[in-house]
Amino acid sequence: MFKLFAVAALGAAALTAAPAAAVTYDAFASFTGVQGAGGFSYGTTDGTVFTPFAVNTNCYVAGALCLADLPFSVAAVSKSATAFTQGGIVVPNDRLVVVPVNTALSTYVAFTIGQSNDYTYSAEFNQQTTNPAVGDVTITEFYTPFGGATQLFPTGGVNQGQPDIFTGFSTFLNAGDVIGYIIDRNGDNTSDATGVSFVVSQVPEPASWALMIAGFGMVGVASRRRSALAA
Image (cartoon, rainbow, N blue to C red; front, side, top):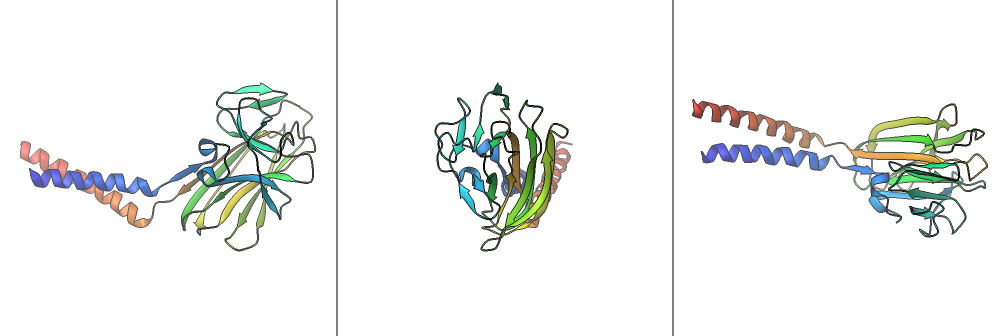
């Protein structure tokens, strides 16, 4: 009986050990109005220089958490627990709302890799303005290897004809690498609101998968052993 419980316990331990390696980071879920929360950062960029937002007060969306360039400069990332419409902008409660500043700068959302590993990441962008005259808000993916130069990859645009786009990738990333997206402006910062969902997942290492499979096997053996004893 002791052996039976020991095998079952070992199988359960294997099952609980494997998922621990498959960590998921969600920009919306982790957003607190503080830079670096959940591994994500936010700010303005010209595609070469990235300047983090500095304040989280005077949010342009009433009652929401936000990070902004300067008070009332409009450029900001925000999160709301309640969905509503304000000034022609649909503010959802399941994704971040990004509004670029009305200058040559765009707004970025980035994630910094904490541990070298295989990762999958995906992002969805949605037009959040009710203004039918708004044109393309360009989305550009970027990758900055630790200590290296930023590489830009055109991703697409969000507009009335294509109100949402989706992108994703799987690759090996080193600790300190940065991946993210630049959300451009269409020239009118009151109408360029873009919804952003950005999720990064760490792929379990082969050893973790082997441990998980072994755990399933041990649980199966224990089950058969229990049935045999009962018979």
